[in-house]
Image 1: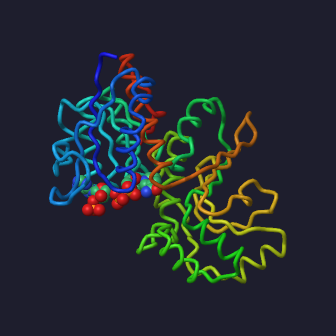
Image 2: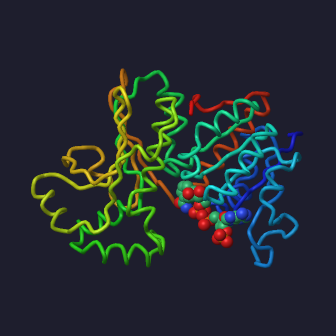
Image 3: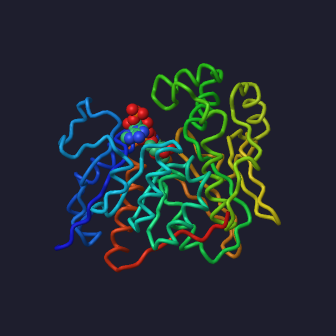
Amino acid sequence: MSSKVRVGLLGLGTVGRSVFDTLSANHELISARAGADVEVAAVAVKSLDHDWGIDRSLLTDDALGLASDPSIDVVVEVMGGENPAGDCIRASLSRGASAVSANKELIAKQIASLVSLAQENGADFRFEAAVGGGIPILQPLQHQLGSNRFIELKGILNGTTNHILTEMRTRGISFDEALDEAQDLGYAEADPTADVDGWDALYKITILSSLITGQQVSIDSASLNGIRGIALAEIEAAEAKGERLKLIASAQFGDAPEISVSVQSLPHEHPLAAISGATNALWIQADPLGEVTLSGPGAGGGPTAAAVVGDIVEAVRCRNMGTVSPPWPISS
Ligand SMILES: NC(=O)c1ccc[n+]([C@@H]2O[C@H](COP(=O)([O-])OP(=O)(O)OC[C@H]3O[C@@H](n4cnc5c(N)ncnc54)[C@H](OP(=O)(O)O)[C@@H]3O)[C@@H](O)[C@H]2O)c1
């Protein structure tokens, strides 16, 4: 294998560390599949004083400088937040480099402009991990399911809230107890707002809806209600009727898409009713397909890194063939 591909990794947190480890542990098979020697050439971290446990010569505290470095072929943004993550992705795409990101917030808010920038510059831009973590969703949607008219999506797209609802239902505990436990176990952040108030699920359904409609869907157009303060009695009352309460991110594609995140009561027979714990799932209704449900691990370092590294492999394969495989076009 003659060619070398230099990866610049921005962020060495939960996902970044797993991406680094996966690229090291599976270096041979990844390089064989990608058709090039895929190496991590540099890693951007916030502080160079910390012992990161990797070769110090790889480290920089200048994420934007790394994204702009012409010797870097593939920029992998796993820092999170809107900035400097957005500037770094734009710097990569503007110079024609491939960019891979897991950043659901940034992509939900700026998908149209980022995809357009990639297209203008003939650059590859991939973000499979931003929706459903390790579950293949965005690529199957745009390829194998690409002939369909999408009618409706319903997703359990946040593992933390599904875990909390599952613990409340199966163990008869309150929302506050379940949240405390989820925080102790590391399932929920110290500030659980993004999960329990539904923002995380909203970002993901917004990305899906923007891809499907070909228009930037505004997160402000959605109706948003999370699970904060949900009572055990509500869960038990639903169960008594043969229904199960789930935090559902949904999109209906009529004349204008209707997007919402809310607690819905699903019949026990619905495929999403059986999704328990931190597992995520997306139920899709489309014509002529009918219904399909994709499920699996929606978060965590390993599953998310699997999706990120899968994107890297595909980006390198495209580079080798002198092509790109852009997301569906999206106007702003
Ligand atoms: N964790 C998951 O299961 C999961 C799943 C799907 C998608 N994602 C997405 O993946 C991204 C990363 O998530 P994560 O869980 O890995 O977050 P994380 O553990 O907080 O890691 C992010 C890392 O990036 C660093 N960072 C922030 N700004 C930086 C900068 N300017 N230069 C260099 N490093 C910087 C952070 O440093 P400090 O800690 O010092 O701020 C932190 O070490 C997010 O967009 C998230 O939404 C995560």
